Image (cartoon, rainbow, N blue to C red; front, side):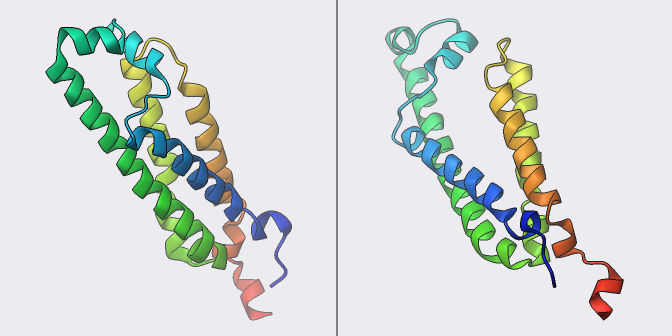
Length: 152
């Protein structure tokens, strides 16, 4: 089968998303908030003010924040592993499984827009939706070849 370059290397887009996710999940897993301004906009106070006024709620916030980072690590591992192996080889199950990516990012954008008045996270989420859709749609013929090409 004569693959086009964009069909052959589209997996790199999905792999890159996984690596970006992996790198960004590490600080969250360690409890390091890389965007405290978002939390401040939502709760109306700084994290230090929250810690002083309600230490139990602050601990709950850190627990969920770190747990979310751990979840992101696992998610990133599966994205990178699937894109590097089965998706790269053209296995259909991997194409179906990785449709979770644009759905995940669109869901994240919807949650962000419903909670936060500032749309600071909307641009990166939109870029991840576009990149994941490109990574899935560019090699479509690799996963679903024309019947005429199969006979040749």
